[in-house]
Length: 130
Image (cartoon, rainbow, N blue to C red; front, side, top):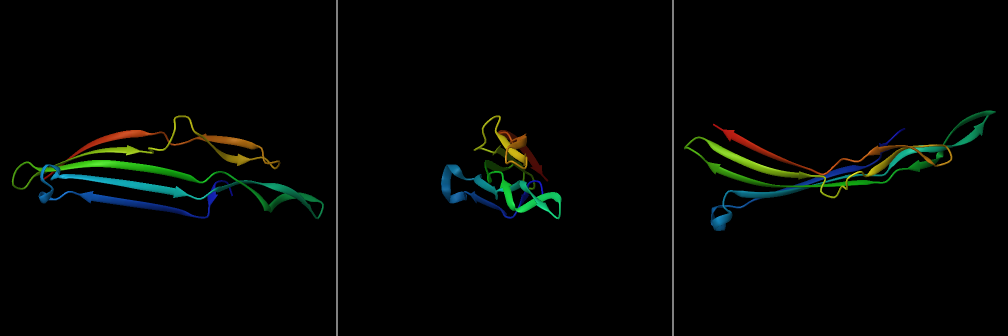
């Protein structure tokens, strides 16, 4: 049951400037959005037939999560059949450093376990095609 999410979705978009866009020719931009519904992180307890069991009618939930990514790409021909693609990506733009996300709750609803959220980071790549 820990961190089970009913819904999640990913959206992504890219745009490449064409030759008629003058100085932007060869450039491209893109963005991505990753959303996850709230997660079940625990439940209350109830007595059933003399035994203490989880009460799944009284669940505790962690927050929904949203992550935003963006990138800039540049493509150029080097020779007739070869091309070079340079890309700068930024991941988790909306994340703060040291975000704590609850992942487990005690039966009284108190958070028992946390995880550190995904950090914001940058990547640069170069791809040579021949």
